View (tube, rainbow, N blue to C red):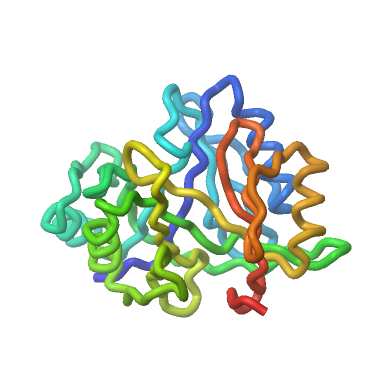
Amino acid sequence: MAVTWLTAFLDTGAENAPATEAYWSAVTGWPLSERRGPDGEFATLQPPDGDSPVKVQVVGEPPAGGMHLDVHTDDLDGLVDDAARLGAEIRMTDLGFAVGRSPGGLAFCIVPEHGEKRPGPVSWPAGSSLVDQVCLDIRPEQFETEAHFWSMLTAWPQVEGGSPEFHRILPPPGQPLRVLLQRVDEQEGPVRLHLDLASEDREAEVARHVEMGGRVVRTTPWWTTLLDPSGRAYCITRRSPVSGHLP
């Protein structure tokens, strides 16, 4: 049994979905696929080379942070049993996948694998960029339990992240999304998820996003936090889009 892929879902209310989906297609450089689902609620941001780790969904009530995570596996029943044993609230659906919440309340699904392949960075005039990381924002009192849950569920090692507020869960080669765990003091409610983009030129990448409608809310030496048109937070980092490492 193995976790073979992670997909981040951008869950957006109907009134904000058209602008938000167009924004993410523009900033990633990945066109939106044809819509699917009973009401056309699902679509994929499709890279030209490889498979997408980012999909969109129109929902009636977005979860905290406006995102959920799909965990792909080669043994659906086995991973569902593991998730329950590790403290998740989880149930199977009639559609062949499971839905649940982590011990800290993060919404996630467990779905079958389909042999996905990692995409490469997208080139822009000032350098390349790539969505390559999900960050779990966790209150201090939830941190140890939530970090243990995700490390054990994925069977990927957990390591300290270079400063006390960060840990990392290290995926094997070929995975599209790194996993960062962040202690956050100001947050209330359940664990939340946000996306990080790696970029060769952070300042130019931020300017490109702002031109398309993003709003900067915080800048640090290592990352810039923005809001998309629906108010969903995400970060642009100085990490290499190829290696994922800081320069």
